[in-house]
Length: 168
Picture 1: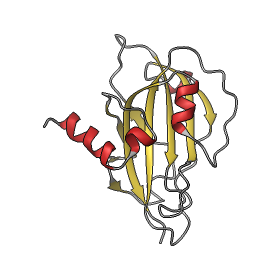
Picture 2: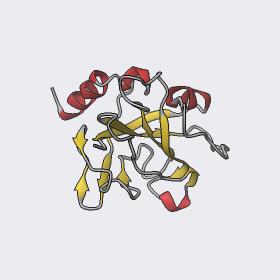
Picture 3: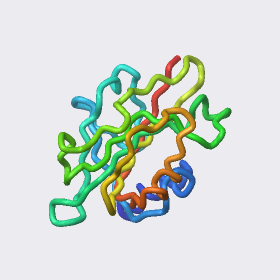
């Protein structure tokens, strides 16, 4: 089993695929919070994740393409009481290549703040290739359905990663 197969197996084990992300042959997105590189499922503190991460992924179209990024918590308000919808922490669309500065921030970054005593929460970052420009102006953070959003905007998942944060 190669590294990409192991990564996809992890996404399936966590039920991100197919519950939150369509089955895809994507790759692990490179995510860094400061000097800390995120490996799938790594435990990070609320403080470490307070600021927007650096994010990269392999481009699919000769150094270009247009992408969207979502970050969501499928465990809100807790893993045992989640009703299948997510809390949206970040949404950026119309990213040309890897140039976030030219993208449109739909929902500003809000770092993880799981309720005290609610247990560990998983935070998922997904990169989607767009087939057309996103014209979304606003999204609600609570009760967000990433799968429905991706389907309604013809977004194809191409990279992902996730980490775990807990607030004791």
